[in-house]
Length: 312
Image (cartoon, rainbow, N blue to C red; front, top):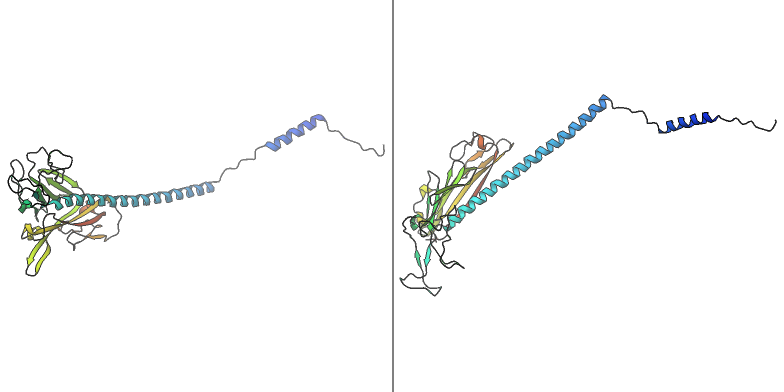
């Protein structure tokens, strides 16, 4: 019939097949594509480059950290050694003040006259004479200080106590005598600075390259007095020694990749030592050797005045 459009109907089973195909097409996974060999090599190369940079930064950081730690350790050892030596040098020559110098007298006035007791003769201990306040030995390089040990009144103590101690913290209060000499002998033994105190020896600092003591002797002249620094064998009067200059050269444990001709000036103030060369010689003419080669070296100097050695 004219004016009537024909409508073609799709069979039901065809619609179901078409819907299934559309569903599969919509949710189907895209085809997977792997990397090529060139891309893999580029990725590996970039990864190795990153690892190399990180390892270099780590090694550099470790080297800097080790050097700083080494320097800190050397400074701590030097500070400890100078503190121990300084405590004993400042006590050298100290005298016992007797507020009752007259037999049987008891001093009640704190401003009363006192007597200086310089010597102590004891049995079973070490006798002390003021002439032996300070001694030195150029051959062994040893430095010796002594002072009298005595008991004195101590706050909150019922009986007088002896507070004097040597470089090793002795001698004990229950020793053979409490009125004896406090002895301190500092000497370099190999690479260890040792202290001998009242018969006991113990190292106090390691990695010591040099230990030197210079004595400040006061000399009288027509126009006054002068202080001259001399070595032990040049001292003419040990009672005239007013102070001691101590020099220490310490080296570290960390091996450093230092440039050639890395030098320091030894304790004598003139000898230049090359830390980067094991054949370089110190002020005593000895080679530094492989144990000290390319190790950090630091020089420390301190001057200590003897406590009771007043200017003459």
